[in-house]
Length: 166
Image (cartoon, rainbow, N blue to C red):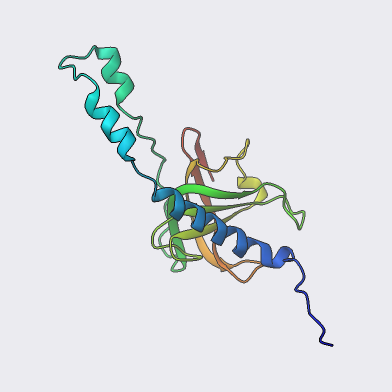
């Protein structure tokens, strides 16, 4: 008779890398979506209009969202900057010191290829917290996080549409 060993569920120290990988996989799957033959055929059957009203033109232009760039102060060799869309927000700080953590899509990435984790101290923590999909920028030294990951310890943080924290 053989014994089967069961692996325990991930603990708090193992959870962040799993969440980051799950987010990356989800984004990779979502980026593969495209038009089907149905949508292409129905678009070809619609009558084309040559003139559009100014209101229609305004609605068709997608709003380009921007965020102020964060900067590293001169003389900080380990300082890095990042800008990207949030894919993960840690709203409740497990160690209770009140900081917040974000993971953003950022090429080439500090934490993993294409992803950067940002640690934001309590005094710099934006209120209300941004959510997944929001655009942010941050700058600060690269430090090792509690899970062993490289992350930016933000000294400056900007959230699109909200201004500066820092």
